[in-house]
Structure formats: structure tokens, C-alpha cells
Length: 396
Ligand SMILES: [Zn+2]
Image 1 (cartoon, rainbow, N blue to C red):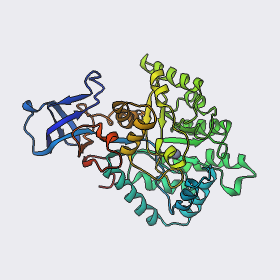
Image 2 (image 1 turned 90 degrees about the vertical axis):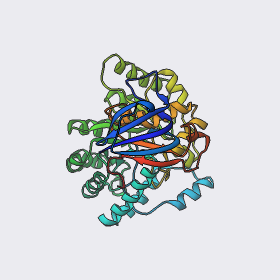
Image 3 (image 1 turned 90 degrees about the horizontal axis):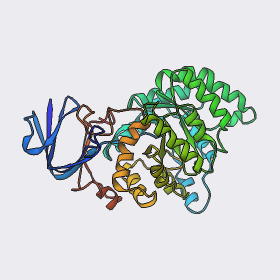
Image 4 (image 1 turned 180 degrees about the vertical axis):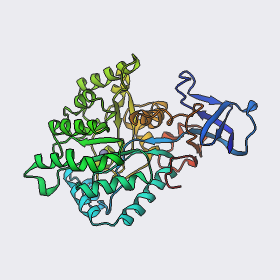
């Protein structure tokens, strides 16, 4: 079954095979059996089984949201209101969601998760990473990942989200639980392992122990670091070959250089870079200062944008809004922001088949209600996603 998308004003392919031509005008696109089969001048487009008229709109790759926490029950809207009135964000609020999630049935969690995943797709997200982290017991962490796997292949074990209340006097016992029985139960349902490094969560030494155990179990590390203050999480992430270091609100000059060196090593034929994944919706929703994307880009680091959709520090899953904030507040040009939200996210998930519309990629495309992709930043908050093609099972 092939589909021709015609009458495209601006086709943003971001095809890595054509680095000098990320955007085409007067182009058309054919998707066949879920893959991009043809890209070229509209006048030369081949016949296809069906035709979609883009009506003079821009077409972009679907967003790759490489960071979310969408398996949970309850909400923390009261905490949000208090924060807007001046109370600072701390990691401790996570335990509120852990209690609500533990009390919910599988079906309650599933219905909420599917609704949130469908909302993400409705805003143009076609690849979505989902973490556990509101279970914090062997059974509930494994349950969260089993449910997440029903909507996406991109799942991350985050048993090390916070130390549960019953372990605060014996943190070592919780770390042993995460590295032992919990990891064994969760690894079959996950691709990645993550640790929240923060004063209110886990230390760098604990993270090293947990991520190393995960790596030995076949999972790829990723890290939450430098969200609320500088820490040694970025250096640890690069040392362990992590796919990404996420937040990066308080990166030091040394952190930026370590990330840039990892990107240079990849370009020279080395292992894949550790991607700096920026989450500006969190800064928006916690009134924290925004991270400096310009510094990372100018240094040559690999940069992604993701939502970090979660009930505490940010309950927006809108990648278009993340793009708008990146342009408004992080110092990114519109094309840099769109690239970070698509190809950057793919890189952070170690995927080459999503995040662009080169021939052979998944046919995950978004037809905007706009003639130019820059409208994503130019018209923030306006529903510019008109039609989504593809999307790895999200809400379909
Ligand atoms: Zn997170």
C-alpha cells in the first residue's frame, strides 16, 4: 500500500544522506508499506495507491520524544499551583505519584497511558520513550514497563528514580534491590536503564553501580543529571557510554567539553555519542533557568529536545511547545530546534530509522497546518499538527 503526499510547500526531510539539503521545495513524498520509498520533485512523482493533498502545507518528520514518564496514576496539580506561587521544585514529590500508582489497577494505568500516548501522537510525536519509576518495587516497576511496551518499543527502567520512604535509612539495600531482583524482572521489558542523579535522589557513586549492573544485563545507560545544580553525572554518562544525559540545566564548561569530545569521537568512527537531551518544558513548569543550548551546539555536542512529560516537574507532552521554547529561550535557531526534536531524539535512542524522511526511513511524517516549519516557534500554543502518518503503535 503506497501513499503519495503531494502539494507540499516545504518538505523538511533532515535526511542524513543529504546534509546540505535538509529542506526541499516543490517536492513530493511516497510512503510504501510504512517506509519512505521516494522523495523528489513533485513533477516527477511516481504513481501510488492513494494520494494525500498537503494543501500547500509544510511536511516534517514526526517528533522523536526521547524522555517521558507516562505510566502513573493521580496528578500533582496542587503542587504545581504551589510552585507557581513560589515553592521550589524538589525530587521528593515523586513519592506522591508512587503511592497513587501503586494503588491503581493495571487497567487504570493502561487507560491513562494510552490516552497520554495518543495525545502525544496528536501533537506530532511518532516515536516515544517511556520510563518506569513510579513503582519502586520489583512487581510495580516490571508492571510499568510491561504496560509501556504495549504502546512503544522504547522503554527505560528507572527503578532508581527516588529512594522509597521505607529505605531512606538503608539506601544501600535499595540500590542492591534495583541492581538485583528488580533489574532481573525489568530487563526483559526495557531497552535502557536510567538513574535520577540529584541531591534528593541518587548519588553519582550509586548511579555508577546501578548503570553498570544494567549494562551487564544488556541495557543501554542514560542519566538524569544537572537538573537542579551541577553534578558529576555528565562525566559518568560519557564514561559509561550512555545514550544520553538528560536535563543539563546546570552543565559546567567541563561537562560541555566532555559531551563535545564524545561527539567528535563518534564522527571519527568511534562509539555513538552521548547526547545532551534538553527538556525546556521542565524549566517552564518549575520556573528554573533554561539550559544554554547555544553553548552545546557551538562546542559540537549532540543535542536533543524532549518533553519529559510527567505528573510532577512538567505535565506537558507537547513537542511543538518544546521547539518554541528552545527557539525563544535556549538560543536555538528554528532548524536546530526541529532537528534536535527529531533526529536528535533518534540519536538519543540510538535509532537511525526515525527522526528524518530520507528514503528507507520509517514513514513517520507530520503535515502541519502551516506553510513553513518555523511556524512551530512563530505560533506557539496554536494547534499546527494537521495530520500524522505512522507512529509505532501510539494511540492507533
Ligand atoms: Zn525525567
